[in-house]
Length: 165
Image 1: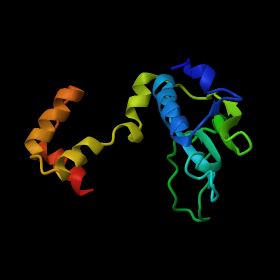
Image 2: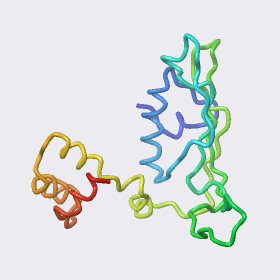
Image 3: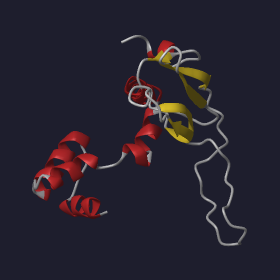
Image 4: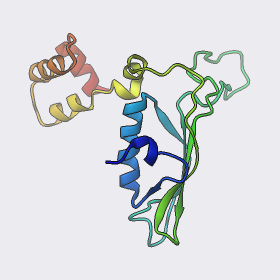
């Protein structure tokens, strides 16, 4: 595996969308950042199996400022948006049969750290617990497994509630 900063950079190329996804996940974990899709368009021709997207625009989770959907006095004011300008624009180059990073800005206007990264809801999901419960593993065993992995107290009640949600 090449250096992630060399691969996730302006002009970086990928043979398949799956390759891009796996490298972006490694990049997120290494840089402690969370990205979301702002816009994307899937391909509908013979390239859809490998390239999958015509373009995909990823932005930092803290990208936009808060804008209420409705013009009323009752709307929430808490938001994690800070107007961060970090973004990545991936485009399909059909002639070369590759995906290319056309725009990349990794400068964030908010703190980035391992502690903050671990607190994002995206990184706290209990998908493993759901998978184990779907295979009829007891909630006691699931709680024990998660407690060993996370070094935190996990109750059966937590497991049962997470599976119901």
